[in-house]
Amino acid sequence: MTTRGQQLLLWTTPVGGVLLLIAFLNFPAMWPPLSPQMTPEDVAAFYREHHSAMLGVVVICNILGTVLVPIFATIAVQMMRIVNSSKVFAVTYIAAIAMGATAFIIADYCWGVALFRPDRNPQLISLLNDLGWIFFIAPVGPLIAMNLCLAGAIYLDARPDPVFPRWVAHFNVVTAVLSVPAAFAITTKTGPLAWDGSLSFTLRLTTLAVYVGVMFIVLLGVISRQGDEAVEMPA
Image (tube, rainbow, N blue to C red; front, side):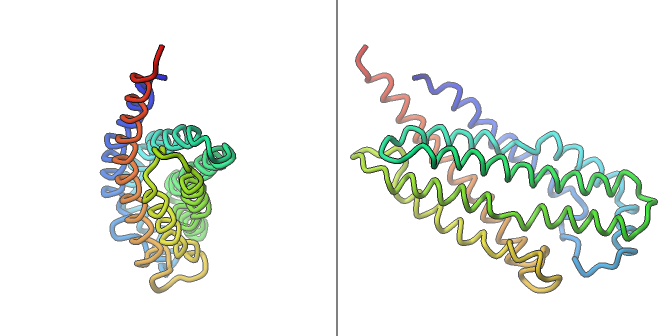
């Protein structure tokens, strides 16, 4: 089996990831993140003041919104090679990918709709802003499901030469645990669990960035070994 398609899609990750990072760094509401304690009038004034910059980033994120899907899809393909575990792990992983990507797109569109009519009632702009942040930070369920499904599949891989190294399973369990605090962003407006807090915002995004970087390197090795196996396979 050729691995060319996997390699091609996998290498879109660093390119798309850098573009997405540039977009985030240029999103006025992101660095520093808007406080959930801001009044509707303050939120509306912020959107009007930074209208062009925010709208441009929203459009870019709409285009790049699924830029991380290829790396997750590649992981799912490799999970299907683990013959000792059920393919239900990979199927669940794929479903969780779709849910996570959808939450990100909804967040992007909430910010976009708030910017579409900057002169509307501040209460409505504030509502859309809240929705955008909650959808961006709080939906950690799909990520946790992905992490645990991959970990479970790896733990069940009893072959002498497993598809993924065993430490990748431990890494995914730790990543799942570190993602949990962000789920509580919907419960508070202050402190580390608020959407702009150290646990919900900083830890959540840092964990995701580190996870994508580590799994990219892991997949390079996994795909390389798969290619070597295909070459050595007798005709």
